[in-house]
Image 1 (tube, helix red, strand yellow):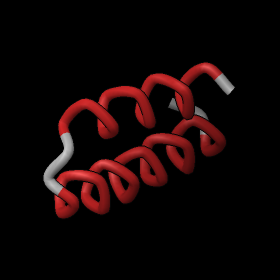
Image 2 (spheres, rainbow, N blue to C red):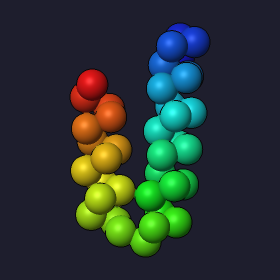
Image 3 (cartoon, rainbow, N blue to C red):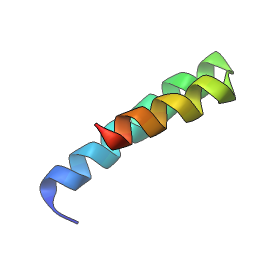
Image 4 (tube, helix red, strand yellow):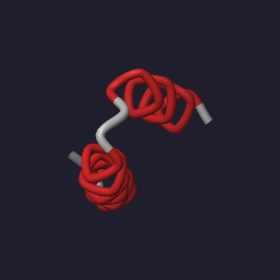
Length: 38
């Protein structure tokens, strides 16, 4: 993995942690997908 990919992965992990705290798996999935594409 490149440094850029590592940063993206780390941000995804942080987003997932935030979303799962909210307890909305639907939003979590959508947020993760949207972030991965952009």
